[in-house]
Image (cartoon, rainbow, N blue to C red; front, side, top):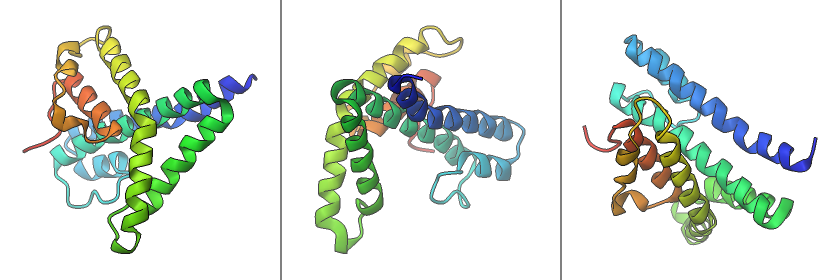
Amino acid sequence: MPPEATIALAAFGPVRRAIGAGFAAHRALAGGDIKAAARLAGADAPDTAGLDAHGLARIAIVLPSERLASAVAIAFWFLLAGLAGAAAVCAVEAVATRIGGPAPRRAAFGIIARRLDAALRLVPALLAAVLVVLAALFVPGARAAGALRVRARDLDSPAALIAAVVAGALGLALGGP
């Protein structure tokens, strides 16, 4: 198998699993089983215990969107800079995830890691957003026009941009009641 195919499978495998979990959570919510939806949608979420059906639905959209942002960034940097580019974006993401939180003792280093991660993911996120809009043209029930109505407040991070575009394509709002 060529290395490009291996990288693509490694990058997009988690996206497929996250989308499957999102669909399973949707089916559980439609059936009224909030506990099953919490288990399915929140497999990677920090805390789903106190969420209602709307919060779980948001997580079922946001988690696959974050995975899509990550996969597109890895593929983008692999195509641009080879294996070193893909490894670098993975390493920056790992550092930003592990120590980029709001803990006071890591604040100085964490903000640098988060900003570097956002910078490396900005162009790939814009490409992924365009791909989502194009895909919405061919998916029954999806709204490409809704996907295009992303406001400036939705652009606080690359993953937030993709989540906002996906929610818009589905005709949903991620914020509010």
